[in-house]
Amino acid sequence: LRKARERGHVLEGLAVALANIDEFIRIIRESPTPPVAKTELMARSWDSALVREMLTRTREDGVTISADDYRPEDLDRAYGLQPDGLYRLSDTQAQEILQMRLQRLTGLEQDKIVAEYKEVMAEIEDLLDILAKPSRVSTIIGEELAALKTEFGQTKEGARRSTVEHNAQDLATEDLITPTDMVVTLSHAGYIKAQPLSEYRSQKRGGRGKQATATKEDDWIDQLFIANTHDYILCFSNRGRLYWLKVWEVPSGSRGSRGRPIVNMFPLQDGEKINVVLPLTGDNRSFPTDHYIFMATAGGTVKKTALDEFSNPRKIGIIAIKLDDGDQLIGAAVTDGQHDVMLFSDGGKAVRFDENDVRALGRDTRGVRGMQLEEGQSVIAMLVADAEAAEPGTEPNARNSVLTATENGYGKRTQITEYTRHGRGTKGMIAIQQSERNGKVVAATLVGVEDEIMLITDKGVLVRTRVAEIREMGRATQGVTLIALDDGAQLSGLQRIVENDAQDNGTDESPSSPTE
Image (cartoon, rainbow, N blue to C red; front, side, top):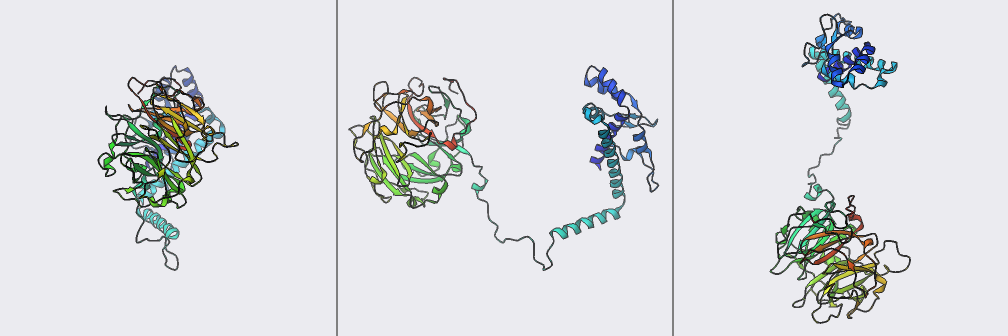
C-alpha cells in the first residue's frame, strides 16, 4: 500500500502537468535554471479535472473517496488536493515533471500515464479494502496456501517431491576459493607468499620495474612461479625432499610485504629451503603413471621418477632424490617421455639430450650423470622442451628459443636449433659468452616470441617484459641489457609467464619506470 501510494502520487503530479501542459512548458522555458523552474511550479496552484474527480468521487458500493486515502503518509498537507479544489505540487512531483521526456507529451503516452494512474488508484482501493476486512485476509491466505500445496505438495502416492539426504555433502574450504592466477614468490631465507598476477604491468626492456616483495638486507628472491589457486604444487627442497600443497594454501601478501616463513608450511630441517615449486594442472592432478618427474642437481646429476610415486606425500615430506654430500636439487619438471632435457651451467655451457637416455628410477635413488662440469662450476637451470620444438613447420609462437641471463643484467635469446642434441654426461657447448661485463649465468628458460618474462633481482625488484623486445642472437655472443640494475644489485633469476597466466590489460610503455 505504501509503494502504491508513492507511485500514485508521482502519476498524480504528471496528470496535473498534462492538464496544464502549455503553462508548464512556458514556465520551464522562461526559467534560467531547473531549480528556479521547480520553485515556480511548486509555488502555484493548479487545476486538474481528472485528479479532482479521482480524489472526490463515490465508489460503486456507496463509499465516498477521501483524498487522504491516496496520500503518502509523510506528505505535508500543504501539497496535494487543497480545500479549494486546486492542486499544489510536492518537491518529488515537480522534480519528476522536470525530468519527463518530451516523447511522453504525445497523445498515446499521455493516455498511458492516465491509464496507469487509474490502475494504481484502483489498486490502492483494493488494498485498503483487504486491510479493512479480516475475512478477505483469511481468504487470500487460504488461496495462496492451496496454490503452494498444488505446486509443491506430495504426490498422490504420498512420496516427497524433494529428496531428504541423511548425510549432506560438506563443503570443503577449497570449494569457497575463487579460481585466480597468482604469483608465488619464495625468498632465499624461506619467506613465501602469493599475490594476484593482475598487480603487475608490462614494461619495456631495461625498465626499473616494480617491487615484488620486501626483503632483509641478507635475503633475496630465489624462486617465482605463476599458478591458479586450485592447482596442486609439488614443492622440492634443495635437499631433494618433496612437500605438497595447493596454491590457495600459500599465505597471501601485498607487493610490499615480505611474506611468511615457509617453516609455517612445512617442517624443514636446518639449512633446507624450497627452491622449486611445480604445479600439477589438468590431467596431471591425478598423478598418471605414464608421466614422470625429471630432476637435476647442481652437481650435474639427473633422475627420472614416475609421477604416481609422488601421489601420496606426507606432511613431513618424502624423499624425491638422494643427493651426494654438498650437492643440491636445482630443477624439476613434469615430462611424458617425449621431451629433450637441457642443462645449463653458471660457466655459460649447455648440454642437450633425449630424456629417454635416462631410465626411470625409484624415489629413494641417486640418479645418473647428466652434465660433466669443470671445477668450481655448477648447474643453474634445467629446461625440458618438446623434441620437435625446433623442427620446421612449428607454430609461430612455439617455444623454440632459449633465453639466457647473467648476474649483471645481460641476456639474449637463441634458437634451440643451435643447441644440438648429444648424449648425456658431456661437458656441453657454449650457451652465452662469459665476460667481466656479463658475470656468471644465473638463469635460462624456453620462450616464444609472443611470450612475456619476469626478471627478479636479489633486491626484490621485479620487471615484466616482452620476449619480442629481446634481440635474437647466436650462442657465442654476450647478449643485450635485460634489466637496468641499481648499484650493488644483481639479477638472481627469470621466469617465463605461461600464456594463460599472462592476461594483463594494463601496460606501462615507459622504458624506465621508477621503482615503486
